[in-house]
Image 1 (cartoon, rainbow, N blue to C red):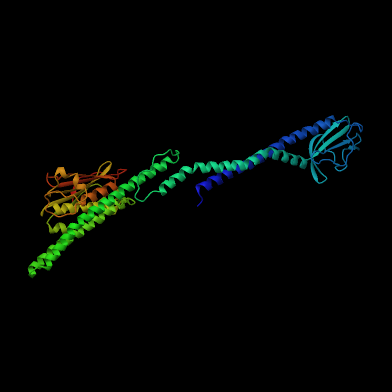
Image 2: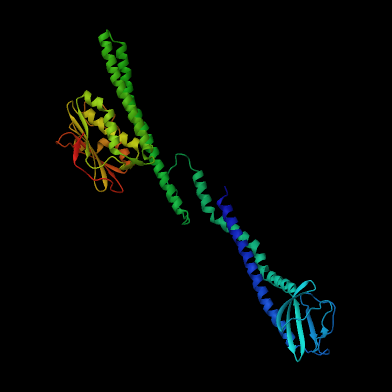
Length: 449
């Protein structure tokens, strides 16, 4: 791939050379046109002013400068050629007075014939001599351009090199940085053309620094959170090994399986959170049927809800929600709804109720998950979106990552998440609002399925 410097040099020098050639051609044809007019005028003046007597005419000559040689011929009343200025070029008379172009002696001639008192005077000049003289005149006119062309090339090379120095300095400044140095570039007097690049690079460095900081924090938090369940697993395994009878051993292994399930859940949540914060949630968006995603998530948790005798169902709008209605990432939306349902199932008592509602207004699609469980205190509703935060007084185990993942997926879809009280005044109502560009369906009445 050619560099910007080579492209600029080739473009500018090539354009300059092309313009010089075009200007030379235009000058040549303009000089030829004007010289022809001048030569024609001279031929006419000579033909109308030369004497017709032998004594007044120039002496006969055999050789002359072909560029300046003018052939003069005089015919008397009887049509006899009485005079010719050179025997090397004897041309026939033109058919009528005035200007004409004749061919003779292996050349083309421009002639002017004048009738004066019965005599005819014809003055001719070679067309090739005219063109050669015009070319010389044009070359003399272009000579300053040809001399200045190398000088202009040197100036272009110097100007291009000087103009690209800020870009070179910028590249060198970035090349000298260490991988950990993600601070914005130092302020300097950059050309206006480079300022958008520097601003975009500063923004990229800031976002990269934020991403690396979040990653380091996440890894540190994850290591801290994993230490507790792994330690508990080790202790539970030691208790199982020290069990005195089969009943104690069975109880120890039951506890061990429970703690192992919690550790697996924590690892799965950590992986999900890492993917969402790593940008997976911002994958290419396609039309997604939110209703179908919700149905699939409810179907996957039907057995879990049945085991606790929880009434888990979806409340749909009567309007047409069967077509693609939300531009998004299907995997991310499945994670969002799945985490909301998992939290609701975990904190809803046996015999409770969980409703999923999907409706659309003029400019947004609204997803709601409501339960009649223990809910979240209003003072804690902002903090529960932080990673690994779990409210006090909860007997149910959890990773503290569910709502953090929900917020990450919502942010990737430019959606908002709000927490409130359940419809009956107890429990929790989670509302996720997705903005849509156009209205595709209208909100309808609720229908429990």
